[in-house]
Image (cartoon, rainbow over all chains, first blue to last red; front, side, top):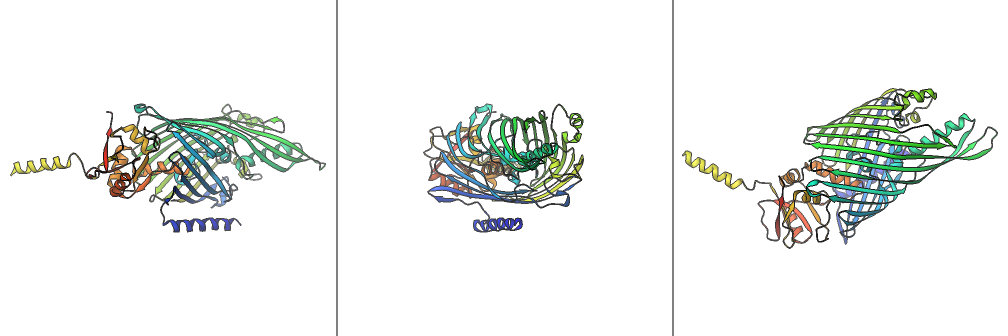
Length: 410
Length: 142
């Protein structure tokens, strides 16, 4: 089934590319309409831990297909839609979803409104996270762009206001603010993580989870990106808060069934960002804090405030080839960086951190094709790694992964 | 003999000095009231941050697909390599934030499109002269 779905997707894209003669379309149909798209396929192999699916055996379950439609109705009004099919281990499985779809009304340079499903501006790179060629390396730094939390933070059905404030020689400021609701698929990292947590808590009381449902209540937040009059420099700050509810059906030892609830909030997720690009060099650094405030079956889950950040340096060797070095750190609780409190609760201390050192190469073969290769060495198993490494093997502290990926866009 | 050589070199310098081949000049429709723009405004226009003229009309931005003029405009005026500029617009396109400018083939198409659209702005080789369009000077603060 999965193979045939993937095959169907590739075939559809092949036909589209054939029809478009490998270039962007532009129609004049009274309204201006454009069709664009992308596809990417990767290979991931890891050592000593699985990372999204069965990666220790090597996995091709890492791809993205997108089809983007845009219509410019007037100078002020645009409607657009992006269909996305993706696979990342157990998540996605190439089901086709609306990635974003909206009506966008730009009233003035300093004010516009988007209604529909809008992408959320978190850090500098969240809005482009689904298109491989927009990301420097195959994975964005996980401390801030954790793939397990993707469904909660990637887009919301609701609306946003945005605009650009120009200060002449003082640079300009882009702002966005949004409010909306997110629907989790049951296979998302977010839902799977809460289900696993519920199962663990239920097992302690001799109960089993027999059914599970997740439902997001709301997300809201905003971002500011300032481009000062220093060529190549961008500075940003963004804020996000979201609350979700989870319903479980639990079975007691005597066979009776009852319902129980959990809430999982992602509170005060704040990201500070800086990017500086100059000739052959680009340096990006971001810092985050967030509170994963969770209450499962009326019990507070100890968590504290998580903290993370990264520095990524890119150097252009020759025009189409860029090499990357990344150092990315995440602590589940900034007041328990060495995991001693986790250990005291009978957990593995190294679930408290994740330190990823990565080296990568990106080759922009031409305007449409991008090839990437990268290698990572990781210390620590925070960010839901036990989900992919259940007992008896369990999760290990030191592990490695490498990824190869090719992507095409038109 | 030496004097002739020096004069020839001077003449050559004078001829090529003000406008090197491929150097870009900004152009708008001849009826567009704009005749100069601050560098910050030019960048804001070509990066989709400023989308309306001061009279409230939408700005139609035109990019050249490739070539020396495009390379020079992108690098010297916008401060981005053509690849960086293309990636900038792809980020906006695929994240649903907006539509990239129309790309056209060379000076002739730029001139024809602008001649037919008073709201359009583009750039052509500085040697090109066409009375349907007018050049816009860029004010660069030193």
